[in-house]
Length: 151
Image 1 (cartoon, one colour):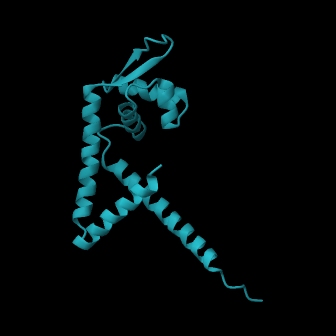
Image 2 (image 1 turned 180 degrees about the horizontal axis):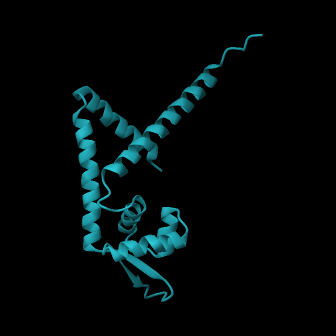
Image 3 (image 1 turned 60 degrees about the vertical axis):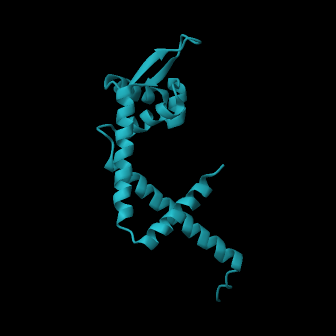
């Protein structure tokens, strides 16, 4: 017995699943490479938390833990290490004395800027290796990724 041929819709679905798998794999590989390229002496968890503190602008430890998708005790350890390194400060929340807000320090901002500069330099070097036609395709791909990420 032979298998019936796939419908056009089934072929499209399979093609999209393969495309999604390749996209996920390569985004994860690029993310891993970027983490390896530039951490400015921080662990990946510390660098991520530092970036989140900057983006969230003075979050509580609970907000930071939720954003980073870690348990509060884990975030407390990460924040303590960043505080010890002089990258962030903890300040008691004036509205709720039981909680603390985390602020990035000038040293933390410099470390974050260095991480971003190193990551951008890595990508700039890689893009420079592309032909003009490939660079144009990369620009189109970035536009597509931005479109995929629109909410």
